[in-house]
Structure formats: structure tokens, C-alpha cells
Image 1 (cartoon, rainbow, N blue to C red):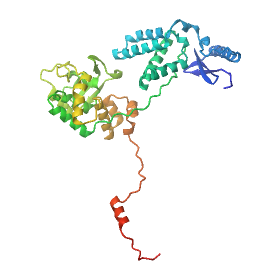
Image 2: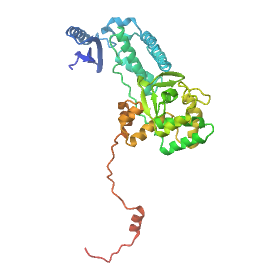
Image 3: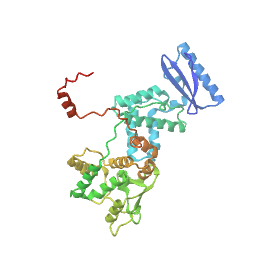
Image 4: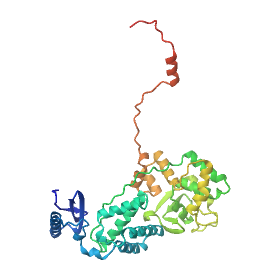
Length: 386
């Protein structure tokens, strides 16, 4: 690109202008589809920017060149409207994230209008969240995704023309996944729940989670009507969290055939006067199992007494998948049983699916004791043959 020139480019089927000024890269989203008439309008805008750069009248905030329609709404107002739109569609836990971000938006942007938010301003907000507010990179990425969604919604509502959050990236360092429980650890945990009076109530629950790899909410939501008459298979289409029942993840259900041992577990557990809507697994008081309460009061102390490194109860799912892949199970079949997206399973467990093996290049050495004996033995110098 020639110095001082502004180019018309296409990004996601929309026109935008690209140029450099004083060593800094600039983008201006026109917000118009790629047509001949719109290209002419974009070219006129590009010419204006080129003239301003040449004459010293360039506005690096880009406010001068953006459509004035956006001037009427502030960043805080836009995000508040977005929250009100989302309030009817999202869970309370998710809504809490939006409300938390709204405080950050108000603190950082104050009364700034949406038109004043360029990509560089968006990047400053990203850095502010991480450096000043001390949010973890994965949380910062989540917040930027929400800001991007807010602007996309604003575009659909004709409140905005461009989206500066589209190319704001957040680098999240990789995090090592906790190890799955070994077979020996599983045996120890099951035995602990079997023979400890204060844990015995949850024995079947723990066995079932290890044996099926169910998500915590899926196991808590199980009712007797979700079992076949012979208890040889279960239907999974609901989840339970914080006492609220809702549809399964991604609104996808599945039926899981059970092993004979798990089948017998359910048959032995099912009472004679069972009711279809009765939960299969309950707390000691007969209520739905609360994940946090179970973890803090029963699971965590049990692992500590056994001397087993702590891993969340959810790790039973990771454990089943890991052992299944290592045993040679078909990843597609395993994904169907656990309710995973096949692509997600491959991304998270690629190291267990046909893992590559390092070639062994090291020589085979004699035992250290043999080498020591050989070094200490006297040397026969009587043989003078060449």
C-alpha cells in the first residue's frame, strides 16, 4: 500500500477502509454491502481521509469519518439495552456475568458514545480488564465475546454501523487438564463410600457417575421415568442446576445403554412403589443433590482421607472418556454415549486418540554393576599380538 493511500477492502461481505498513518494501522467499517454504488461512496470517503492526512487535518479518533447516526447512543446505554434484551433468554448465572461486565463498561467508558469506540479503544478496554481489574485471560476473552455480541445486536437493531470488537483477540495460555482417576483410585473411592457410614448414602451416585460419565446436572436430573422398564438404558434430555430443571446442553438428548452392573444397580435401588417423577439420586434429606454441597461435605474430605490428589466430581466424566479412548473405543461412539460434540472430543482428547509414539533412539546399555566390574578387573597385558 502506497504511503498516504486508503484502500477499500471487503470484510465479511461488508466494505471497510484500511490505511496507515504515523506507523499505526487504521480500519474504518463502512457498514455497507459490496455493491458498485457503495464502492463509489467508500472511495469518496477514502479520498477525504487521504486529503486530511496530506493537509494535517486527519482525525485519529475517526469520529469525523463515522456515520453520525451512532452519536445518539452511549456505550453504557447500548449495553444496558442489550442486557434487557438478553434478560428474558438467559439463565440467572449467565445474567450475572452480563451485569458484572456492565459495571466495568460504565467505569471504563463513562459517557462515551459508541461512535468513539475504535479498535484501538476496544483493545485498551481489553488490556484494562486484565491489567487493572486483574481478570484472568479466559475471563477477559469471555467479556470481549460479550462486547462483540452486544455490537452485533446493535447492528441488527440499526443502532450501529461498524463493530470494532470483531478483531480484538485475547491470548489465553493453555491449561493442563487434571489427570483422570486411575483404576486403583476409583476402587479406593468406591470402597470409601461403601464402608463409611456418612458416605454410604451417595455410593450408588458415585458409582453411576464413574460408570456413565454423566455431567453433574444430568445425574442430578435423572428420574425413574427416564429409565427403561428393565433399567438397561437411560434417557438423558434434562439437567438440574441450583434446583432448576431445564433442557439438556444444546437441547440435544441421547439414550445410553447401561452395563449389566449399572443395570443391576438401578434395579436394586428402585423401590417397589416408585413414582415416574421421583429422582433416582437424592441428598440425605431426600432432596435434589446440590453439587457444591456434595463436593464440600462428602467428596473432598473422602479424597483427602484417602490421600488422593483432589479433582472435582466432574472429573469422573473426564475419567470415563480417557479410559475409554485408551482402551481403543471408537471416539465417535464414545462421543454419542457421553453427549460430546465429536469435534470437541477430538480437540480435548486428541492425545488419547491414536497417539503418536516417540521412536526409541537410545542404545541398550549394560547394567551399571557389570560396567563397574569390568572397569575394576585387572588388565591382561601378556597378549602383545596386534
